[in-house]
Length: 119
Image 1 (cartoon, rainbow, N blue to C red):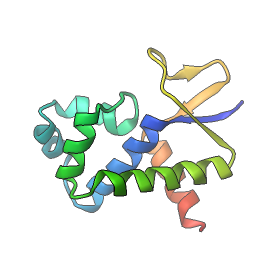
Image 2: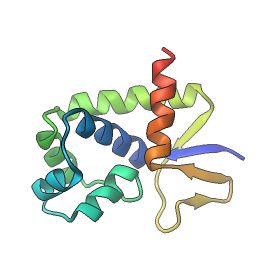
Image 3: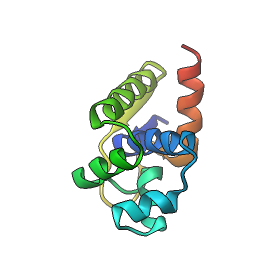
């Protein structure tokens, strides 16, 4: 079984980490994006993909530039890959693949913290 995650899940994990560091609630960020807390939660968990507009609005709410955000995303993807994970594009529908289960949400966040703290 492959170790898989998606670009959306990595992006969401980085955003969730930043939001928690700023001690902000999901509902607060969701309101700034004009979406429900439940919809925002799906974005952070990687179960839904963020639009370009949502990325920019989220960066503004989290006081981070898009370039800095994506620098963290790229670093995380590189770390995941060097630890045997494949990062793939999210497909429509099920988050499961016939090659393995995709790591998303809190599990991915914990994995990234573990991997990045080794360095």
